[in-house]
Length: 312
Image 1 (cartoon, one colour):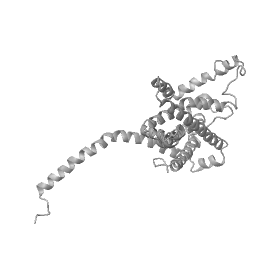
Image 2 (cartoon, one colour):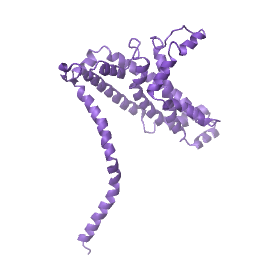
Image 3 (cartoon, helix red, strand yellow):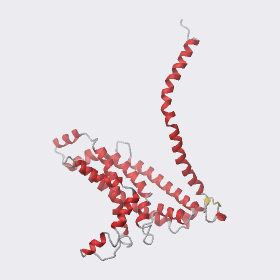
Image 4 (cartoon, rainbow, N blue to C red):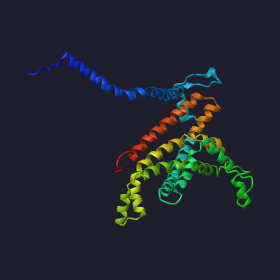
């Protein structure tokens, strides 16, 4: 009977082979470890700092009032803050309107530039170009366009449509639509890019088979195109909703939250509380509440949309 015990030379050889085989598997993780640790530090430290300061009274301009606050900041948010619920309500309105319109226009543009026509490459470049413009530059462009002396309203007044000196951003009845249009210009290409990338992966054979069966464009879109791009729509909608909720640069530059607080979102209110009022403890508590709201809404949305599933 052969011995079940491995001889010492054979055991050494087996151990060396295991070590030699394990080294290549560990090498990629060792190479990305420094970058991973740096990213963890840059992400984890700010998040933990916000949670810490949310439990503190912290105002650098009034150091004698600084100290542990416990849940006092959170109690004030829900019971004694005259601006929290209004800014949260406007944030929800802003996100729903913006994301819905951006999705519809982005889907339409993606379907158009996915077709074959002369100059398609140029058309795609023009459609996607606004997304390459930074948020601050986008805001500056639309501030000039909405300028009462040199912008759109001046030319409309020259045509007899409206009055001279009218500012769309200073009127409570027009400031919201004006801000919506400005953000649409930059947000629509984001949806168009992601949806177009998914559209190009839909097998052409399915459309040919559907045409043979007599299915029209509408039925092809509902039963072939839409199921294939569903995950792209869900992901892009979620990402854009989070970005729009946290949108500060455009509204801050266009309106500053005005007029009369009509366009103040919750993140913009947080920015005013921290940067202008220097109340970093209370602003951190507001940020924590906003984080929990976004996390909860994202989980519910992914659950209801069955992201990554078969959609049934």
